[in-house]
Image (tube, rainbow, N blue to C red; front, side, top):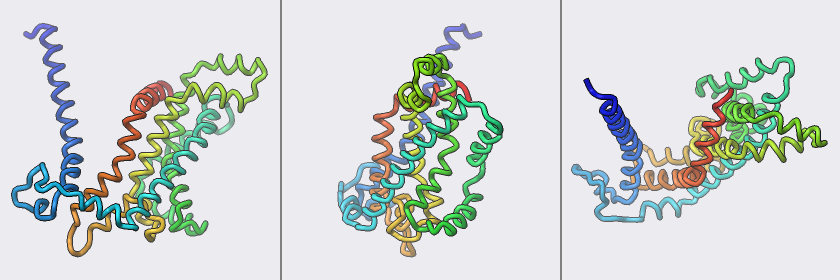
Length: 280
């Protein structure tokens, strides 16, 4: 039989090997896309593909950046992602604090009904969203996409932030109330600073969710004035085939903002998600 020390060493080795395999599985497709974005068509369709581009070209990126439609798609994505994230955080702060600290009739059914909208498959929501936006005359408008993204992302943001607020000691708020603070002052001067890591985590989640969304804008955005870049990438596929070079270049450019933001906010995201899961 193996000794306890040997078992720990074997378990650690297996854990590291699995972690390495997962990292390779996640990184190789992205690194191959980066490599393809610097290749010529001859190199891309070569029978013996190589990871290192030969020759190394930048024309795919130039083609994307000089395409006015792609620039418009990128601008639309930035506007939609930022607006939906800011509004989502603003609403989530009030909703999560209300569900966490106030007891009112129908509180539990309402809370679970919010989460239930997240459980539904997105395909089941396409027709209701389209009919609703048509009645509101918001189809093919950026404001309509922001509204849809809010409805899709709001349940998880409220639940995450509520769990974080549940873990806060209520005595701090009670002391502030005794000192004469009003509810809004308690919320913005005491609670919000204490849940700042959770807000950063939820903000990043909402931003990435909006940045990568494809299904809803595919149906609700009908032309280049409102399409985000996730939908715009699909137009590199036509009856003549797939224009892999520019498509991979645009994909890399689309991924960079989310990667950069995630890198800077990583510690806040891990802390916010872990502490926000303490209570629910």
